Amino acid sequence: MAAPVSRFLRIALVVSLGLNLAVAGLAVGMLVRGHAAGPPGRVDFSLGPLGRALTEKDRAAVAREFRSRGDVRPPGPRDRRQDLRELVAVLTAEPLDRDALERILERSRDRGRRAMEAGQSALIARIAEMTPTERIVLAERLKAEVRRPRGGGRD
Image 1 (cartoon, rainbow, N blue to C red):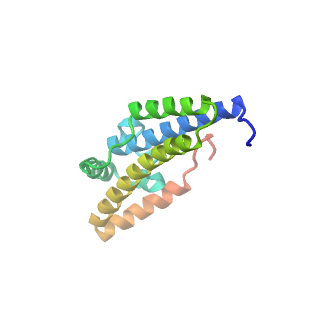
Image 2: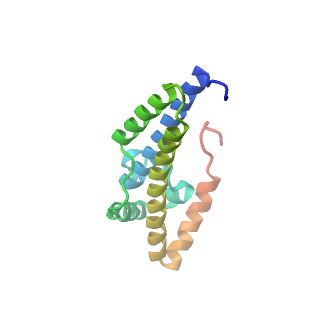
Image 3: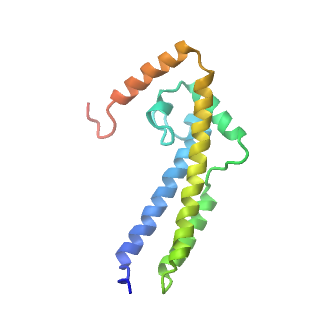
């Protein structure tokens, strides 16, 4: 029989899932809204340095392409709240229902994965439309973006 999960570990798991879901929601939200959810060109969790290297026009085109895909819906606040309610219920139940826990975590992961894949497809479609010169300029901005110091105010 497995050792009981400590209260601290349960709380840590709930907080961790909540943070993961929040980051996934921010990532997709920023992709869909372009720069409206943060400073233009500075923060883009979903596409990383490549997304930050895109021009405002290119980010808007990627967002339009993403939104045009009706089969993918970014996880919203209602989805995240429901996942957290279910997770808390599973974590506090005795005995632990491992299958239910796995289903909740898989559903959350799959939802985020589908949105990420749709974002990546939209990005690829936009880059494929660029001229060779535009791609070279993008590559130069990408190299500069990767060299740019992040966080902590360090140079």
